[in-house]
Every structure is written in C-alpha cells, then in structure tokens.
Amino acid sequence: MAENKEITTYYTVEELARLIKASRSTVYNRAKNYGIKLDGEYTDDQIHTLGKPIKGVSKTPIERIRIQLDNEHKAEIGVLEQKHALELESLRREYEIKVDELKSSNATIVAALEAKQAKEVADIEREHDRAAKAWEHTRDTLEKQLQGMSNQMNELTARLPRLVGEVVNHQLKLAEQREQRAKKASAQPKTKTKKAENKM
Picture 1 (cartoon, rainbow, N blue to C red):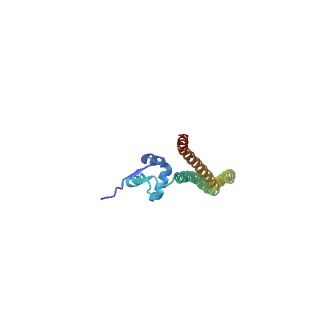
Picture 2: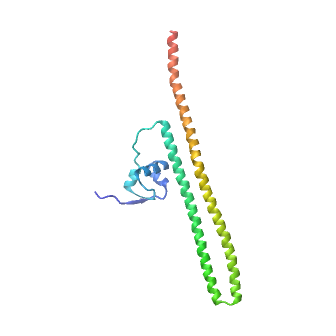
Picture 3: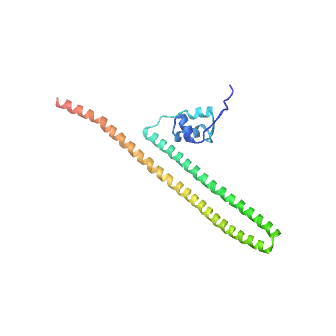
C-alpha cells in the first residue's frame, strides 16, 4: 500500500492541539515519544499518530499530577526559549543590516573622495562621521539589548527549576490532603455503625 505523503501545514502547536483534541503539553510529549518534529508540516499518518495516547503503566494520582506539571512546564519553557530565540534572531538581522548599510556608506565615500573636490570631500566626511556616530550608538544599543536578553534567559533558566519544584510540591501537598480527607470521610460511617451496635 502506497504511503500517504499528503502534507498539511499548521502554523502553531495550538492549532495542531485543537485538531487532535489534546493540550499543548500533550502534543509536545507525544511528539517527543513518537519522534515527530513539530516543524509545522505533518503527514496524515503523523497527525493520526499524535492523536494516539502514549501506552504505559498506569500512574497514581500523585504521579499523574507530577507528570502533568512537568510536561506543562517543559512546554512553557520551550515556548519561552523559542520566543527569546526569535527576538535574538531579529536583533541579529537588524545588526547585520546596519553593518551592510555602513559598508555601503563607506563605499560611497571612497568613490566620492576620488571624484569630488576638496569641499565636497569635507562635507561627505562630516556626514560620514555623523553616520558613524549614529551607527556606533545603534550598535551599542543593540549589544546592550542582546546582553540584556542573554541575562534574562540565564536568570529564567536559573529560576525555573526552583519555581517548578515549588509548584510540584504544592500540588503534591494538596493531593495528599485530599487523600487524607477522603480516608477520614470513608471511615466516619463505619464508626457510627459500631456505636449504634454498642447501644443495642
């Protein structure tokens, strides 16, 4: 049977998640387990595979909560990393454009020096100095922005494990409290029955 090679394009993970009726974290988890790249283009077979739940040993409520939280935070980290990577790439492209503009400006100045008179050359040099200062200011600003983005990424990377641990511990405590309340509630009717028998 020939393989179905029809390609369907989805621009976001959210659209793919809605299609297979699953959360984004589930899509990331299944894609990782089934070896599917979330690059925006998928065959029908890949979409069908992403719609399948992952087979495995049944988990306890606490384990399921931990796994769900881990997957959600991994998905959030992936989104943040992708966002910052796009912003850094945009800044790099802007930096390269400014470099090309400066090279073009320098080439124009060299041609003018050979063809123009001294006064025209002086005017061009003054304009070049102004453009160079403006470029240096732009370059310094871009470098500061890049450094700031890098510092934010490092700070976020350093803080995320602690934040994830706090959230997981909080959820685990809530789950344990619910289990304790459920045990107490199930034990109360038995206690009342024993008291009634003793009275008789």
